[in-house]
Length: 301
Ligand code: 13P
Ligand code: SF4
Image (cartoon, helix red, strand yellow):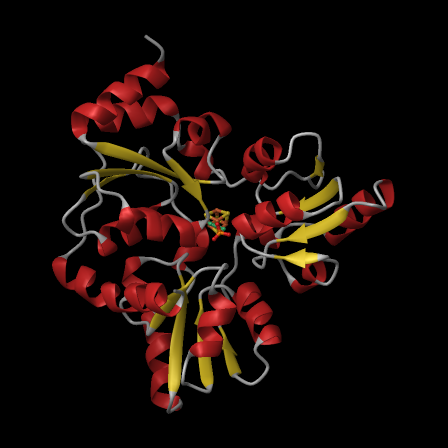
């Protein structure tokens, strides 16, 4: 029996479903029941009927799935898989901002710990941040933790006043403008597609800025056949599956999120068999985080 067949059998036995982000290794995406960006996966976690969710991603994703489904069991193939940016804000600064400004909305990127979400008014993902911020009644926005996404949203919603936090994704932050320019010089017809976690210098070069699924959709609809992709290299799997024959170029310093790559088929099988690495959160924390996450799902509808 292959490992994929074993996983299938254990999924049946445990009434489990496998959800995977586009950044996990290709062989994991291949056996997943649902693959998507952070927004899609949070909706999929709610709509799936299975009792057990195996979340192939990093810890904030597993936590969000648990908060939205407190009665389901959420298993992480590797409990060390974490997002560095998720920790780059703090409760004291949020409180200081709330004390200083009336009519403030604390907008929390879903790439954040549950600890941070509980002090926030609404969550967003890169796919819905612009629409949700625009729809908020508040004029002043404190956007945590990602400053790059915050600046991108602020550019799209100039009628709001933004307060920035100094968080960033180390993988997108380190993308080098010179390497993107070099790729463009080698492939002048290629469209440059950029994730909003990238810094301004990279965003300025973009033909399109979008979430991982936004980038994948853009390629699917585009008449162009060459693309420079400025996000984590795991999206290549879905891009090539969706648009065979099209060419995708990544920067020479390949953007790799090591935490996402901790997810393997062996670890998925192991947690299915043993029930190890279950996401457990205090009940009060689940209740406090439910509000900003559910508000995101309602406003994003
Ligand atoms: P999206 O999948 O929402 O575009 O987010 C990218 C990301 O960094 C997930 O960790
Ligand atoms: Fe976090 Fe960046 Fe990895 Fe996404 S790619 S999980 S934002 S560290």
